[in-house]
Image 1 (cartoon, rainbow, N blue to C red):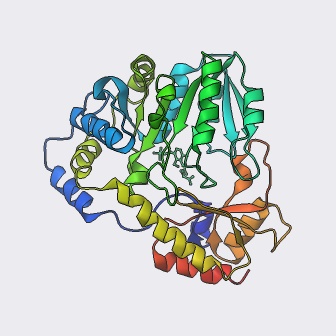
Image 2 (image 1 turned 180 degrees about the horizontal axis):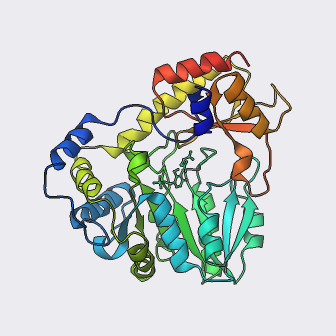
Length: 361
Ligand code: PMP
Ligand code: GLN
């Protein structure tokens, strides 16, 4: 879709990335580091002082103490963290639960392990359906992948969802939780619940974070994994031969920058953008679904067209000059709910121009 947006000179609200400038304090740190002695390999797990700072952040955000060297791994984006985790922990013939609609990077590493992805649909309002999830889990299930706050829908898990998950993990001793929390700091009215808040899940959960989302630097491809030491030992074995270690200058820059940022303000920053985008969209025929977190807004176009969502998004980009993502691509079976995803991590001018075009629909 980003390619189509370029070809048709459309406003790109499809792929998830901010279009506003990076914090000048971060670019100043980078410029300074360009001539410093930071250009060689860091230790395999990550720059020790950055690991320490991630441990402090985890303590401040979730009240959980993790040991930096043993339980944290800095990865080449969340994507590598997810890949290394699945490759390390899932064996051939085992099963992995994916909740649809789901982000696209979970299935490939499962298939590469000769394991079986088991796709379970979320409810129509994108809450977890505990009846179908419970029915899908069995002795062969090694992993359940959860993504909270959720891409593409912006939905967040509740305490009662976590209680259900805890029951499931208790009932199946082989079952682990891979918790993709890359939007953990982009939440609005309700606070984010992390697996790190839930002591009953600690020993059985691997969490995934992304500096790309938290610091508006998606192209840097840097994130981290937190896992109990015994699981982390296995994850590191994959990481060692996949990338060994992650960009040194990026780690040094983040090590300085993390001290300057109040990450808790990120939610307010994006809430303003969400509210602005939602107010602009009131004058269109699109119906917006609730957006609790992430920088994605889902909208139904059922009142406008009977087309399937792929045809609709193609027409939107070619005829109206706005690129979005069809929600059906996040379902293994291509379920079409006549809904599209907008990314509102954009400056006000871009969102305003997009809304002007969408009013023509
Ligand atoms: N998980 C989800 C849910 C995402 O939206 C993304 C970002 N596209 C990722 C993982 C990958 O993040 P990164 O760019 O840090 O690899
Ligand atoms: N996670 C981003 C999204 O959902 C995109 C990353 C990618 O294009 N692979 O839009």
